[in-house]
Amino acid sequence: MKTILVVDDNPDVINSLKIGFEDSTQEYRILGAESGYKCLELLNNITPDIILLDIMMPQMSGWEVFERIKKDTTFSTIPIIFLTARTDRIAKNAGSFLGDDYIEKPFDIIDLKKRIEIVFRNKKSSPILDKKNH
Amino acid sequence: MVEKELKERIVNIEIVSADLNDLERYIEDLTNFIPLPLVTLNPALKIIDMNTSFLFTTGYAQYEILSTTIDVLFRNKQDIHNIITKTHDSGVTKNYETVISTKEKKEIPVSVTCVLRTDEKGSFIGYFIAFIDITDLKLVEKSLHEKLERLQKSELATLNIMEDLQNTIQALTIAETKINDKNTELQKINTELTLAREELTILNRDLEKKVKERTADVEKLLKQKDEFISQLGHDLKTPLTPLNILIPIVKEQEQDPKLKELLDVISNNLQYMKNLVIKTLELAQLNSENYLFGFEDINLSQQICNILKMESTYFGGKEVTIQNNIPQDIFVHADLLQIKEVFDNLISNAVKYSQPDGVKITLDAQKKDEYIVVSVKDTGNGLDSPQIEHVFDEFYKVDYSRHDLQSTGLGLSICKRIVEKHGGRIWIESEGKGKGSTFFFTLKAPMKKQA
Image 1 (cartoon, rainbow over the protein chains, first blue to last red):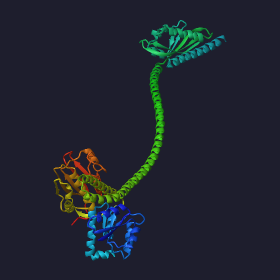
Image 2: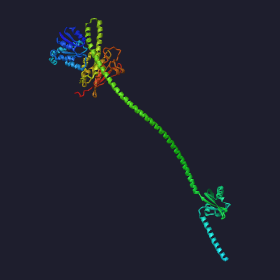
Image 3: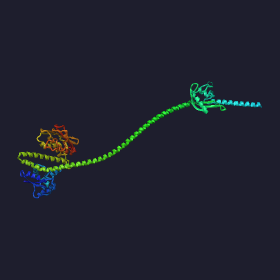
Image 4: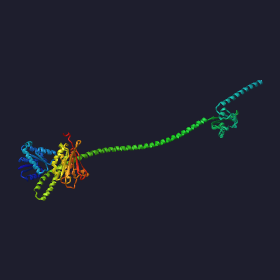
């Protein structure tokens, strides 16, 4: 079972993802953090397999959380997929170049699952991507 | 002694007599020499003597005229009577003008001077009369008179002219006054005009300022609108996310067919709302200054093929034939994603607004100067003029009565903004309802000629 950490200031997004993922094959476990601070706090105890990171959050934005995670070698290998309502090219580019992927809200659960699988597959087969994230 | 004395006397008498004869001859010669006609009358007005000039002037011989009464000469007998009376009264008559007739009945204007003759005792013994021919004088006088008359006439004419002139001058003066008045009026009007112009300039300046302010206000508001839409879109996206995840799960788990049907309705509306939010955001972003375009040189025909492969699933069971006539060598300088969006919108639009039995869509492109004119022609429903006018308006739907969950009313607005952001133009031509329509838009050709 893989652990997915969802960082989003809207708890309904976290809850719906919990239902969407846990309900099916028991393949994934969803953990939620309602702010950047909570995310960093959780990372002290748990190392998730992947982080779904919302960009537009109050107090600490997704960019800042991303930066802090990547600075700490303990967590820097954890793949990150950006979740955002932003559709502009800057966000898209930053999302796909900085992170492992980028997905626009509102997304389909099936589409998200596919993208997560692709990220895991790439992680296994491509050491270049590993290096990029270091 | 006596004899001697007598002889001396006789001698003296002879001498005196000779002297007298000499004197008489002298007077006679002198009288005849004078060119002035002279005549001597006795108290009964009979001519007793005359000179040569008199005979010459009157044309009579001495024997014919001697002892004749003087009035034979006068045409008007009253004249000689007047002369005589006046001479008796004052001793002399000077320059009495009258007319005398010659023997040949020729009339001569004369000036008559008459004096009384007296003997040594002072007794009256007759008259001397002198006639001065004033024919020349009369002629001169007549000529003068005529000249005078002419002068008078010309004076009159001059007076008339003067009068005319005066009238003209008066008319001119009146006209001048009127012109002056008009001039004054014009000057007044001019001054007023200048003032009005100045006022207008000020008003214009104010207006320009106001227009600038208003334009700035409108621009600010438009920006605010786009920002608001953008914010609203983003805000709507987050709550849509859990719905988008949860509704399919609920639908999957639900067994009751009636509830499943209701969930379909909810699902469709959610999809519509999602599309609306995405498209609205797209539109707002196209207007945003921060929007970045990724311009590149694109082979249009090749990219169309890619789009068509992807889009074929959207046709919803209709039989759609798409013919790509775009020449292989046509390149455009554009943002690929945006151009895909335009084609996507135009094609799905053509499919949407066609009869259920299907539609044929023909794509073509032509190079025209530095532009490429792209056309998307369909055999669909077509449009009438009022629809053509509004078809690119935001949230415009051709048929409002149709509750269409497929249409956001933003597709063509997005196309318009994309094309305009590319420096092009988009327009539609349709021969009317049921006759299909053709969308045209222009894109820039690559700067350098494509190899």
